[in-house]
Length: 325
Ligand SMILES: O=C(O)CCC(=O)C(=O)O
Ligand SMILES: [Fe+2]
Image 1 (cartoon, rainbow, N blue to C red):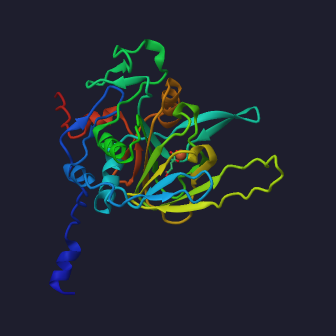
Image 2: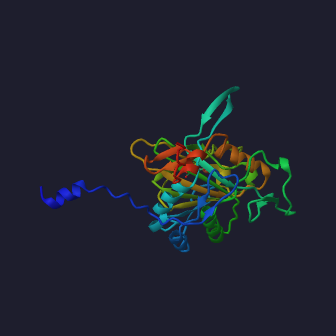
Image 3: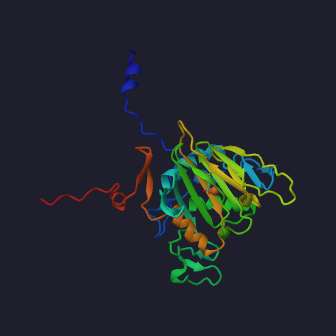
């Protein structure tokens, strides 16, 4: 073996360079388990070019009203933003019980989730206080069972840009992290009453590609006796940086899902921006996306989500006090 090759062989492996330059500023709030870094400048600059591609209108099927941006976030930064958000956000693995045929059934949400925002009856002040949207006065104690969390700068920036480009308004940001192909979301529609009649939802993909399936809700037999043709199912393979804007009649009539997949699947982040009009939306979103368990944080060394603990976080980088002799 040549000397050069041996040298290379025994050289310690350099730690992998992060895909982004961390910002020194952070968003913090009493409701956050830990502060969240601002979006790195380089990403913020590139986001000014979003949408990277013009959206393609998808209205070819009955009741379908969507715009598909392929991509919305420039591909040059999409994977970097994925790494950044996976590292900087706190996530939850929510468990809850539902009644199935009268019997309480435990549900383990098959993905990591987190949520920020508050419905349109309230707003956050600059210093993170919650006030009534109309009067500007502090909200009464019992308004929420949960503690609403302001949208951190790194997710607020993308929200503002998306509002500007789509003309829609959003006050909530939900984030899903699918660790691998076993994580999923089953068929549902985001048609809760608290979102209003024709809700618009902007849904971003960062990281691994996953299939996004859509199918029309069952159409009741027509009263005229005419046979109804069920609209075709749709499969979109969403890639890093892509965005789908679902609006109009879409949620009322269509279901969507990200099914489980076998084999190697990298991590994927999904960000949705929505607008909840009334209080019930706030409690609902925190119940099902934060829940009552502890937070998780990405562990870059082990390449997995680890339960976060305030003690370990506080001791990080701090030299332990010398023992008394
Ligand atoms: O991950 C996705 O693309 C979809 C997520 C979704 O449908 C939801 O959070 O309601
Ligand atoms: Fe959804």
